[in-house]
Image 1 (spheres, rainbow, N blue to C red):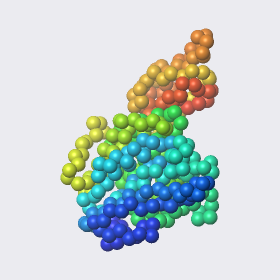
Image 2: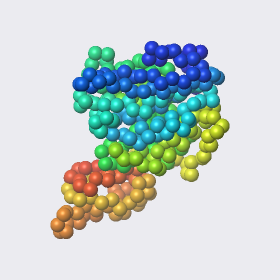
Image 3: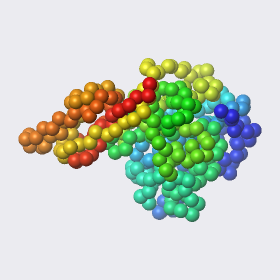
Image 4: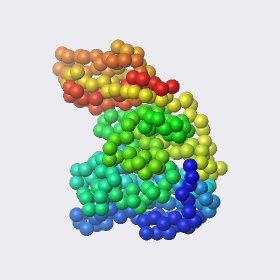
Length: 324
């Protein structure tokens, strides 16, 4: 990775010299009360040149695990590099975070608005400002997400297949699972790839729920990436993952055949056999009990934790083909 680290970093109208640390304001807009809403951008620079790594989270306002991971990276001083530069944005969608909602106030999903527009909707303007003023400064991006609604994601890295550098970076990060998935149009991951900036997307946990295992996995993965690029200071220890990551080439959702009260009976990350009972759907009256079975053998990487489901709802995300 050829670092973009220059003698002076110019970002959001400010100059940050080597050895400096600054908290800048990513001005999004104002509330309808005219109250300013700013997103803090925390930048730490070493005196020694090196790569620039961008940490982002909260692209959806309900993804609190990602926010907590970046918060810990800052609070523990992990973001103060031995060489190079780190840029941390813990909450990209501050409006959703304040309102405890996934989308922007205009109802749009920020992660479907890239590259955005200077004169578009609010979410589109934020997307445009992010990729024009901040992202071009990065050599590498770590973007932290959380499962939507009540669907709990096993800690996992998502990358597009066919890039060995991404495979290596995902293995270094050390999440239990690496899921190959295509870049969706207009997403942050897709625009970073088009700009030639490597990005790892981390998924873990569920909305509005903090999970210690998920956040620990995210923080430890960030430390391993920083350590790999020589940016992690000596005071921080780096442990190897307990197990080698499992690379998932293909996967599918097991959906509810009936509506009712749902209870999973298998743990996240578990390997199950075909036809194994992994949950059941009942009615409130004790007259109906349907056993949900695994459609194939594989790893359960997402579990719907909603107690009430409707026919067709996604219940389990299961691997169908492993790479290695």
